[in-house]
Image 1: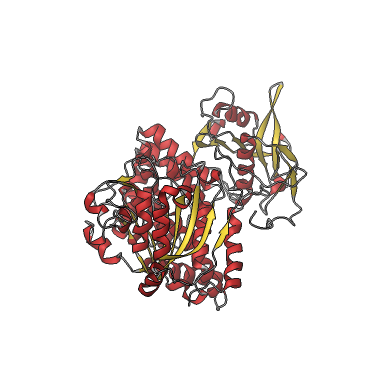
Image 2: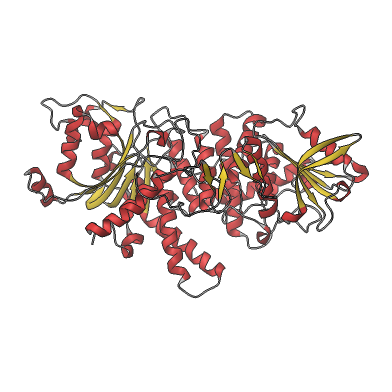
Length: 625
């Protein structure tokens, strides 16, 4: 046990197997379809701005002599909750329900709308999100969306109309699946087409203070000519500007390769959101799921869960005085999708926000100053490499979404010397001995073996503690030394390793080498379930070390280095079970604890380690000068 649970004094409790209704506050059965309905209930209030008092859950709709219950119904403002006052009907289904499903498909929603003469709009959500509008003569026509509260119809958005996304994860999942199903593209191709449009959306928000270009009208959605106009007059010019801004991510000849119908769907899904103002953890969740669906892992690649990224970043940064944090050079030598670098941006952003809030200015001025400083910091101080071009590009895109630093991410094999890299820009910016912090999660197992004699000869570990040079080594073993090489003397490294490197007798040579090259600051044994949903190492640990100076290395080799304290922690829970399903914190009576949003609290002791470590550093004085 790491320490007392931070939610031990929270009194918002709920029985296991129940979920609290966002609209009524009543307890409902905890089922997948109920979670979808509750997310859309929240969306109606927080995104579309409807009054909770004007919304009903499972409202009975009379269809002839029968009566069926609609998932969510929005009534005219202040009107009695009667069928003749219905304004909008929403049917929210599980993510695997198809629009043509016999009992739960679009036809069900249309029958509800037809039976409710005042209902102007309908929304059906399952594998797709489909909106409908009552047309002239009572016809049920396609629409781009339902209108926001106070609007008669969905309008062309201006910057001030955009709202942060509540459930961006589901939105991007629907976009990706729609492209995959309707475009005939492979999953990784569908993934990058989604990201192209995300870049267009972000660029439009960044460059526009009033009218926007990333939108589609109802009438355009219904016609091929309108869909062509959206592509030719808005999206392609936006993507041309994106390519000019990010030439290291997109090639000059690239284009948006979606058919017009698919493009219209994705634009309609995204147009009302402000991706810039959506909370970073919401964007992070969405991006991770989107990438995870396309990450094959055939070279031992997998996600580092965000709680591990946050823990490692916070621990290494907390070994430095606060006044140095915004000047530290940080590198991830196996950056993957960019989890560690995004955690660094988020942590440093909080510090910058505090500094800027202490100064004068409006909320918008403070937000702009923070964004500028984060961009400058990331561009100068955050760097990443990955051997996979797919992952390097994915990391670049992730960093753009979180504040930038994308221009410092390169496709390169960090086990080789920077002088051997093909990219001259990479070798110019990233070199051995240049970084204050290296944080990484190297590939494990699979085909991640190194048997190149030339490469092995560059590493002390290939011969250390052995009479004969080793003919091959798992990549994760070499990465211990490979990542260490990029550190300045006195710099810090946080690395995810399998327990075997720390415990296996046959690998004692690695531990001995490490003790002679670095001071161990911390060792955290992670729960077996930590990487359950990403296919990573089953027995993981994170160690944090400080590279010794040349004089200290001599003392260590002579066994004369002074004794020092080491922080150790064994968190028991990771917020997920062995199948990757979420696990929630419960009281001894079996009651689940709700967070400030009314959702169950993940039972995650990994999230407590950094706080315990900070207290430990203060007690032992383990902070760099």
